[in-house]
Length: 340
Image 1 (cartoon, rainbow, N blue to C red):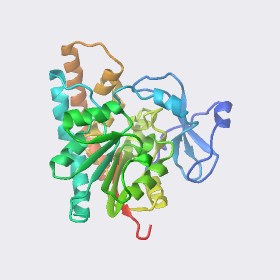
Image 2: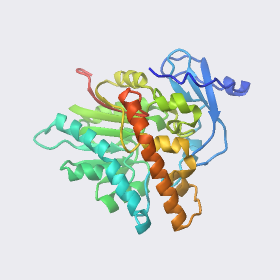
Image 3: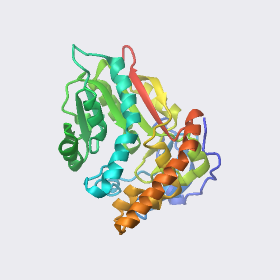
Image 4: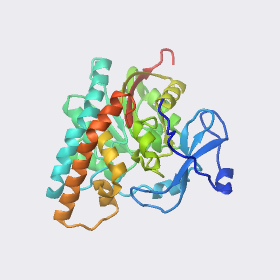
């Protein structure tokens, strides 16, 4: 495993050390403070947070974690979905349709492995569906889909723009019968949750015995974290409460009744763009939109093209790290353990 050995531990103040909680994985209270930081990308707060590593199991987490009320303030409006589709955003929309194909193809592979259930195509439930672009492509491939999101605006947009059904709420209270789903997907969801096991256990109940779970998270064992340290975009302080390595995911899945069957260490949407954002967060289009950066149409186009060029320049490195099984994101397909 690749660990952030290049990082020098940062001494946390005594009051911060006193606030450290037990590791939820192994109940160890002793941690190594990797570094401190604030919201580098969206600048929703100036508060300082600590990223720590458990000295026993090496699980990396934000500690102390923000309260639920605080955490809500760190998510800007329209987080992770584009609210408008005007002429100025057509190029970005076409780009999103292109790069989502990695996620779509991975999910279609899982759906094909599940096959018909009770004579019908398996239903795919996408948790954290945003504007519904991913399930739009799955629906076009001939499979029934459902979306779930915290945001009522995102769910409404999914129906209005992409004509896919979505509901608002949490997976633990999803209005679906047990065993109803053939595939449940969670792309960049688990790292945001106070209790990831609750969502995995809920997915286990909703899945058909032959169903599949797909999760994707930033990979804290990646080369980018090793090289960039606290500037790695995959940390996304303070919104990411957990920073998982592949071994952490395996333990988590096992505890919740799953076993992994397939891994993918590269996807075109997240790996190169994530590295570009790590290197130049001020160029990130979503960051500029959320922060309300004032720019002319020409200025916006110039920055977008510069960011695209930087993303393409990062492509060879991200392919190399993925070939070393140390890509900056990891996608896992898992199935229910027999008898679980």
